[in-house]
Image 1: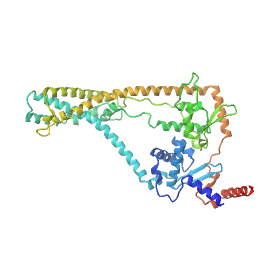
Image 2: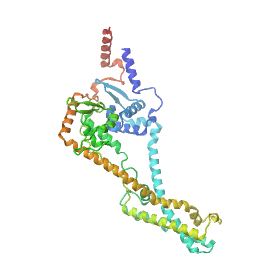
Image 3: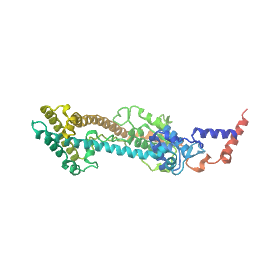
Image 4: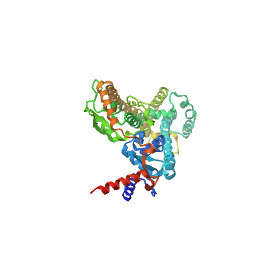
Length: 455
């Protein structure tokens, strides 16, 4: 009995359940893993296995194991062991609330995300505002300098220059409001979108892809063929005309992520078994992944056509004004050392900022040009990968592939592991002392009998 207790305590230590722990271990987790595990727990319920969470979150099994052990330690979750040897974690109903109560980092994380979103929005608006301000400064300065002619700058002309800058018509007018609203972004955001784009269109789709792969494996009772997985993976070589791949190297990332192993059927066919994903609840039984994974191509901008046209016109007005102002400054012989001699002047400020305005004006069209070339290269690769996955899906209609899938189904029946989610199958739980669990007492007695029978 003592030996069984020691073995049970050792198992608890290995799975990270330490009641006396004071340090919040969840703070050390990668935020991506912590968020994925918590969201999966909220979706699946209190009693889950590592395979359940890995399949739901689309994360690696090794990452999920560490995340579940860590969160279990911080939320005082309990462990249950089924008669098949599967370990089931039982978490409190409100996992997020339990973590928020202990972890300051977990409480402040949503606030930091909102601050980051607000900062990103501020950057986009500031960049768009810079274009408007640049156009105002440049053309106001040009008008003031032309009004002065070739004479020296007088105080009256300075007053005229400042008065012109204060005219509110351009700044407070509805230029942004009357632009095309075919998209949800405003005009200032459209300026940023034109120059820098709108980010990776496939952000977050990788997690969805692995989620779909896990559901595909679960729906096939944990045993699948390479042909079934091919439409969801990055293929290493072109499929032939029938959609068959010359090798099955594309399966390796799935084996690593979900701890699968290759097996050979009685007919000599190579199949792939994923014990971690074989145990499933009814939650997954009706789910059907889509047929083929498709990456989305990179777009130049999500701004509307009218907004893009307005941005281009304003950009041309800006760079044209900068070129003309640069020439005008050289013609008038205005030297930097004479600026601000009579106090602050908007004309002096614009001339002083002219080098920065030149860089801004040049980059305004250079960056989109380079970005469009990069997008063309990316989209060529995306189109090729999408086509390869589409071609690979054709092999699922072949008779030889159907026979191989049937072999996988038959093998799954021989390797089936009874689901551990049924509480009646629990033989040990950390909620109850080991001495009061009949199944553990029976197991302990059998172990003693075996030990005494050994010579």
